[in-house]
Length: 190
Image (cartoon, rainbow, N blue to C red; front, side, top):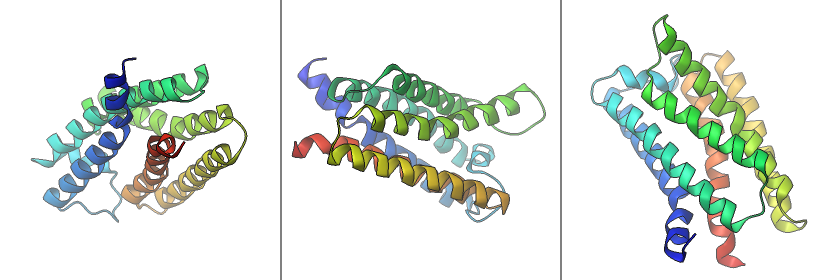
């Protein structure tokens, strides 16, 4: 990977985080979406104006995260399982952005399955990333972020059972996005 490509892909993860928070936040505001309600954020896809933001944001962020994966593979020691988990997770995010939720047909099931794959693989990729790092403070920090994500996922499941679906999705996203920030800026200091 050239220096220019490496420099650009380094910031792709932060760009993806920005795209997600801005499109989902703006879409929620435009649609007056109840973030404490029962319906998951995926229902933004059915709201005028918010639907394009929701779907476009997921798709663009998935592509940016795949680019960020290229940066990670170049700058950090990672194994095949990390790459498989990250790329399959981002494929799930991409499909969830393209295929709307709802209905009883194949599309609705495909959306939900893709979103569940994304949610299940985020902690796996963070775990595999941490496991591949050399011993020391950085590895401990990576495991700390993994455990933060694991607890956020447990919290998300608890919120989902209490029918607070949007926050059940947002909480684990925050853990993953904290990891993206840490991975992006780690090499600045080293």
